[in-house]
Amino acid sequence: MFDVKTEEEKKSVETTTIVKKIKETTEMELLREIVGRLEAIESRLEGIEKELKGEIDEEILGDVDEKIIEFVKKNGKVCADDLQRAFNYKGKNAASARLNRLYSQGLLEKKQAGRRVYYFAK
Image (cartoon, rainbow, N blue to C red; front, top):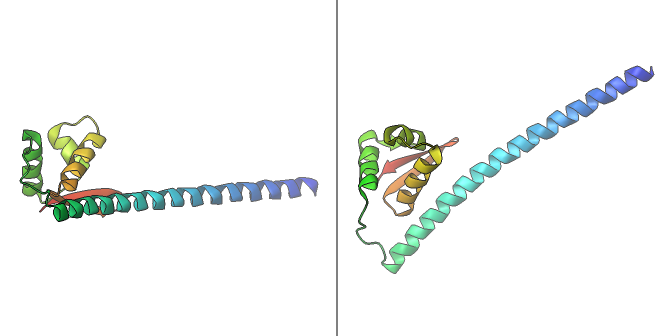
């Protein structure tokens, strides 16, 4: 009888641990999504502030940025993985940062689909 109770307690502890891990994973995914949305809102607000201040000028772009914009126009939509492969970036972070900077400058639009962020030409 004693062994049965401890076995039941062990199963209960294991179940509780699994439920906690699932909850933590779900919370982290939600937080990532919220952070992504907040970053998008922040970028839009920066663009609006620049417009209101009259700071948006025809920006001079570097060769790589011009090629990226041409690549986006040609493909319709692009994610960081696409850019990484096309421009031989070592990591996805560099490609993502470049796309996000072009978005912040008001040169690209972006939409999130799950974990991926797609960029479109304006």
